[in-house]
Length: 296
Image 1 (cartoon, one colour):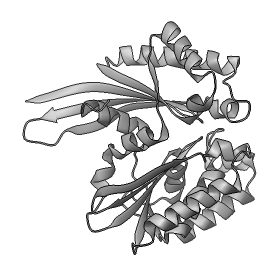
Image 2 (cartoon, one colour):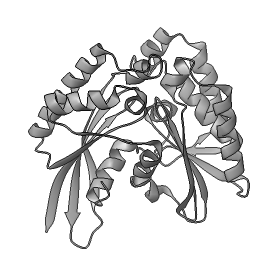
Image 3 (cartoon, helix red, strand yellow):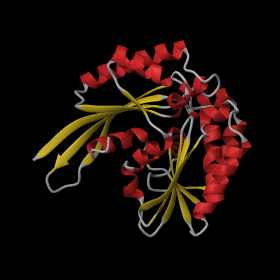
Image 4 (cartoon, helix red, strand yellow):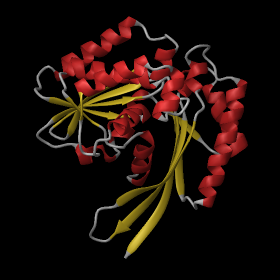
């Protein structure tokens, strides 16, 4: 007997909003499958407002409302049974974030949960991440977003430390990340990884997925520090327009990919990791899994 459920997750990030629709396939005697049915990404850079002027602009509120109405219609067409909408650091920090959530509720009939960095890290960890963790290895998991970056350390298959830092690609583009934050991250990584040899990095987020795609590697193969560093230099040598034209990047990916690469490079350097694995997971996947497991 096979049962198929349709769940959806809305991830309202600092760089973009995403709607993930997933088929959940239950079969007696077999492990439940989570198959992505559709992923829609809308480039509304809320962090541009939140991290520079502290509030989400009227223009972006209107764009959000339009996007959420579209998401609502798509979920209806796909016959989604359950969904959850979560917003991260841009909505968290904008002083009108709660007001915007109320507008969305009134106009789109969608409730938004504005989650903190710790919950964000926990949700992502409940995604398919455990499928990649070998119990005899130590992993530093790094999820770089537009407004925040979550670092989680796993050893023996269990999370032993996790922290969210106010560093993200949109913040870095707007020069609102101080040296103190970098120093705090370096200290946290070095302190927490000091007792472990051969730490392996796991990266998630749209930017590292794009870098991995450009490498042409198979999904289970890692990227090296040398490769990542050479890509960083190469991307820096191109203009914004060249990155769009020659590397087929989205307009809202071509600028943030450089600061994102810098975060991953520093994480590798400070943890001593020589390999970076890139499983295709993220907050939206975690939301679906957490809903299914009754955690959300």
